[in-house]
Image (cartoon, rainbow, N blue to C red; front, side):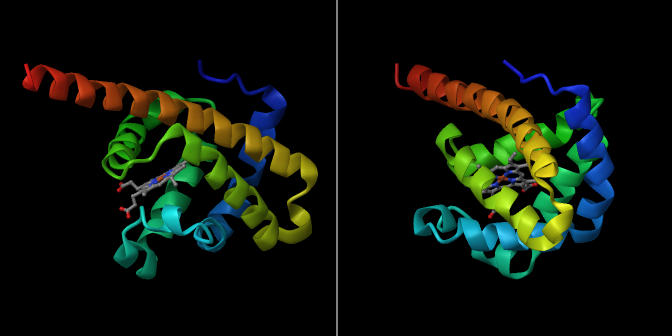
Length: 155
Ligand code: HEM
């Protein structure tokens, strides 16, 4: 089930979207530094896309698009399907999502400093999980499709 975000959370996320736009790549670059202290997680990512800065840019763009569309998430259907497809190709599972949350939220504080108040971080935490739930749901459906197809191919 998708989480329902309160009007207050949506207001905070929308209000902080410009700061994210300005500092988005710095935040996601810092997030990956934190995330990649886990070598198993690091191995899931394409090294070239990290080094060129391409992956931090993609993630920053996705987070920003999300903040800008928080009241009309149906506008994000196509990018969400693309992300879910790429996640399934690279073996991303529901259990990985807390690791990204634990890397992303402190990274926002590292970069924005005092501007990232507890209230802002908690709103972004809720918003992250609303998006994560959507992705996890799509990814589960894709994994099921793949295993059903493999199952019928072997009979
Ligand atoms: C709400 C959370 C997340 C968002 C918004 C997000 C966003 C994205 C985006 C935009 C891409 C690029 C898709 C493309 O190729 O066009 C991507 C790829 C990827 N994501 Fe995520 N992601 C999230 C969570 C996660 C988690 C939990 C993991 C697991 C540790 C993960 C691992 C990956 C990997 C391995 C790729 C492929 C990178 C590559 O090509 O090297 N993501 N993600």
